[in-house]
Amino acid sequence: MLSKRTEAARISLFVLDQVLLAGAFAAAFALKVHLVLPDPELIPEVYVRLYVVTAPVLGIALSCCGFYRLRSDELPPRGVRVRDMLWGGFVAMVVLVIVGFIIKPVGPGGATAPPYSRAIAFLFMALATIALGLSRKLSSVAAVHLRGDPDRLAQVVVFGMSNRVLKLLGVFERMAHMNVHVVGVAADEVPEDVAPRMDTDEAMALIAQGFVDHVLVDAGGLEAGRLDEILALADREGISVHITASIFPSTNLVPSWERIGDVPVLGFVTAELPFGARCAKRLFDIALSGAGLVVLSPLLFLIGALVRLESPGPAIFVQRRVGVRGRTFHMLKFRTMRADAEDETGPVMAVENDTRCTRLGGFLRRWNLDELPQLVNVFLGHMSLVGPRPERPEFVEGFKQTIPRYAHKHWFKPGITGWAQIHGLRGKATSLEERIDHDMYYIEHWSLMFDVRILVRTLVDGYVNAA
Image (cartoon, rainbow, N blue to C red; front, side, top):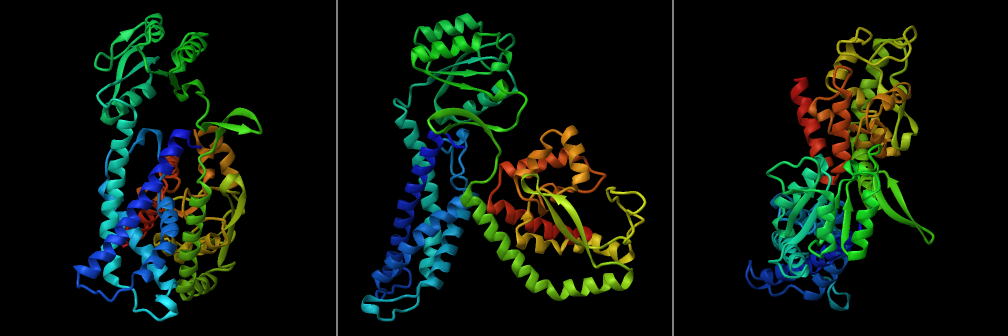
């Protein structure tokens, strides 16, 4: 859940983007009419109507692509990332073209107008890229000046020292526009190159004397009762306090203040995607899995027939797996082993060069063709194209007891492929801890562009490795 400051920054960025993108579209129209292969016959009303429909769709598309997924250490954005701006300009053009196919050009009085200019779409892409970069730059400059005197440094006192604190101090150092100066750190041991060391009473005296603007606390190393004293003093002086998550060392859930009725509560929530992002990911899955099922249907029927001919048993192997929120579902695969492969052993994980595999099964596994029926799981909503790989219920309970954050992978729908898989982390021989680390990185950095990157890498790497 976003803080009020983060939410306000996101809304401000969204509004600023919309204003600048509208200006970019107007500029693209003007350039086409007067400069780029001039065409004074273009009707302004036609393009105004087009952009009125395009603007909200474009706002939703940019939001779903992660343009407004801000973290506290990105407020304001510290710079313009060219890759992101190019991606934003491309998204802007694609949305304009799609809307242009749907909204037919109609002139005043319902008269038929000439087709939309393709040059305007490309000009809009170039100008939208510049507009999005300018938006980030303006927001960064404005945030510095809204804090007051940009030359005045905010004086910060830190209580406690840990890896979390060192990371935060590193953020302060990198983000010069934050105008932060660490007065001192109250801890037993402080690296000499970090900040001056002081004792707790000395740091609290600075707060009481009005020399401190902000307090950062790592509660894990404080003496009993000290946190209450620091909070009371900060409250009296009217300065803000931030406490690292070390106050709750036993959880990796995301803490946030919420209200249930009129009662404020501190919630610990999962890192599930917002509703709009879930809708975008689901539409992406439906479109690609549906197209894949249609295009690959001859291959699916051929493989199914070959599996049946090679060995007795069904062509499709159905297996229970654990999916989103820990719910089980039936995952589909082409059968690659003998039908009685687990009759004597019970559920066991497959290994490389598994003797239970059939000849055709080995070929299907090598080229990952045995996974193709999971397009049905994706289309039905059990799985996603990209996400953490699902595991069997028989193994999940044991993994949750021994692997930190294992159950957190169930915050997202399982995928046919994932960030861990394209890094070679699949199968019994690889580290499960590393797989979970990669799954959590994917969950914490998700965007539609990230999914596209993983899918492309899966196709390219799968072909290279198999060949």
